Image (cartoon, rainbow, N blue to C red; front, side):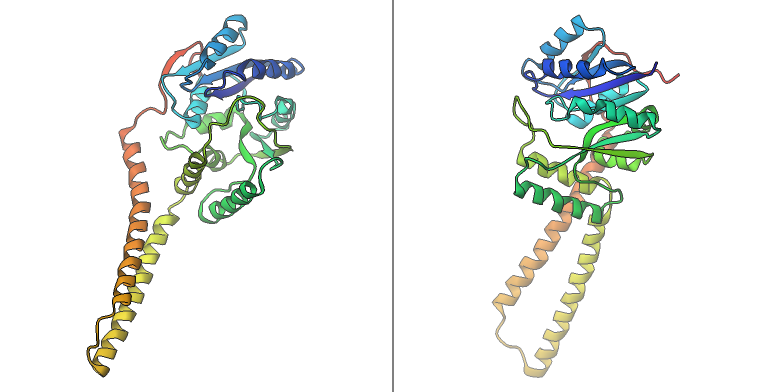
Length: 312
């Protein structure tokens, strides 16, 4: 009988852990599979870990990993994938916005032979402004990156053991999972569901967190921003040479006039802005290279009741 692993990263989700487990078990009991539920406590400052430990004491199907601090959702998912034993893994948030009722459909896609079965959510309940920003972002990111991103697709998905092992081979520190899932390829099936609003607790994603996450998506999978800097530099150089040539011709024709303050300050500000933007883009890449060269682990484990997966 196949083993299905449920990977649930949690950060300050004390109010949802018990409800999450109950709803998961309610669905998993209906399916002809063995299962394990892997909770990853991502350095929570509330009682999330205590709730997970209570479950683990009473239920042998509950595995847990508690990280030494908050390393972020990407690292928490990676920690879970390293320790699960299943033939397939289902990644889910602990806030119940990923409906456990879809587990059966995800596994059905897995049995059909797909290595990735992705749950795509609608934008029901989102504000028009947020929906517009999301749509606009995906248009931009798909225009400039080397992988395809789909609006509504997130971490809620099933990965086959082959897909899991492929993800684990990617050892970079700056991880953007949406891009990694697309980059590994493999066959994919999409199922759709209506967006579910959070019932308890508050979202851990602030506006600036989302902005930084969006920048990660653009930077992580292409070099086009660097090329834009390169081409912009040549364009500015060309326009500057044209301007110098025209100005020199006017000096030869009419003589030296009064210096133009507006022209000077415009040129300084324009060129300065281009240089600062270019340096910022280059600095972003250099910073990522610096982080990768340090070869620090993506996470550190404090306590756990799960062993590393043995592929042999």
